[in-house]
Amino acid sequence: FQAEDGIRASVASRGLGDVYKRQVLVGILVAIHEYGHFIAAKLCNVKVLRYSIGFGKVLMSTRRGEDQTEYCLSAIPLGGYVQLLDERSEDVPQEERHRAFNTQSATKRIFILFAGPFANFLFAIVAYILMFTSGIPGQVPIIGEVDNSSIAWENNIRSGDRILSVGNRAVDTWQGSLISMIGEVLNDERIEMSLIDESNQKKEIILDVQGRTKELTAPNALFPGLGFKPFQPKINPVVVSVIEGSPASFSGVQPYDVLIKINNIEIENLDQFAELIVSKPGERIELELERNNQIYITRVDLGIKEDDPTKGFIGLQTTIDQEKISQYLAVQKYSFPENINMAFDQTNQMIVLTLNMFGKMVTGQISGKNLSGPVGIAKDAGTVAKRGLIATLSFMAIISISLGILNLLPIPVLDGGQIVFVLIEKLIRRPLPENIQLAFQQIGVGALLFLMVFALYNDLVRIFN
Image 1 (spheres, helix red, strand yellow):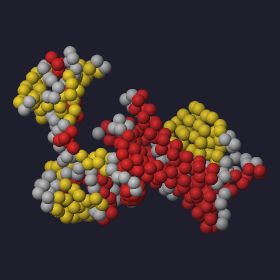
Image 2 (cartoon, rainbow, N blue to C red):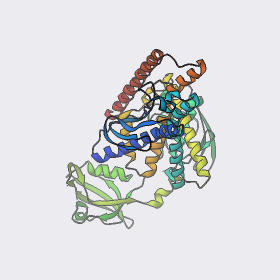
Image 3 (tube, rainbow, N blue to C red):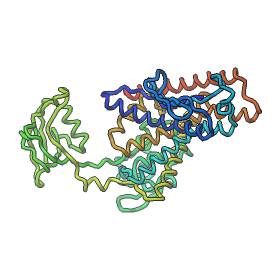
């Protein structure tokens, strides 16, 4: 018996640090899934021969416990497996036959098979509890620019409106709004929202998007399709310190200066400022700044980064005005026991959303572009690992839920397919003939390969676009 995981991670990266981060994140989720099978087998007194993270050649191993179970780290980081004693794959001594997986009752076998996906769902709940206890930061869902020919404009959605709820679910952040809106589209192609405008007048809005599910659920298509953008506050960077001997110091830039423009381009946030500087190695720029409520203009001859001659260097450490940005930030934080209730609710919402999306993807009702594969998962894992613990936990919770659901699909090589075989055996009171099982397994392998290739194609299209 092998529990094959739905995560397939490619570790192409710009640096070894990103590779290790991605491998660690993916490896943790694989280990959790397999540990579910492992602990369930132990509880049922089924002998575990091997617990492996990865496939292929064993790089490191150790044997532990009364059964001398082999714990392995293998060469190919594409999943993992738990190998149980089983008469179908090896000779089992008569005295150990009662500990073989295939001799267990249907209830025990289903319990062991289901334990891997259950461990993934349990991890998501624990992750959300930790996040809600610490506080999940996000941006307040305030509407930005609205296209005056869009469905949003026609339904009286205007710039400055704040979203209070979507459907029957209160939302505090754009992330929560996005997830709930997609759920509404998938459910009945109607988005019910409560908003409050800048004069504190409440609005009840229903966006009828009948026939537009496939369009709106494509990656990054919901907000443009509805005709509005999330509001992006303009927060000018503030100089914290100036590196001695740097281009900025020679140009007279001082701490507490507010950075306004570069070459007459408005500076709207830290990322934009950094991008403008990096894109102009060795060039002279005109920098407009505010000091003591007065505007100054200075010229800066940018340097070149020592480790990358294609990137510009100015020699500043900057921050943002926390008082200005705090009005646009929301933190979802709850104490016991509300944090537990919210964790179960969030996990349930993501399970329903994932199942709904996958089901409609199979039937062609939504775009297959939503399917992400090894490169996409690895790329996202490397990105979120740089954003801190909360972002990493959020990403891992979503991927863990997806992994649990994927492994419950009724595909013979996955846990769900094996559970179906056990249920059929219980129904007809005998195992399915081996040739029939083998035929279904071959079909299952083909289906998985198709999904993997299609997902990989989506990843590559996203990257090269």
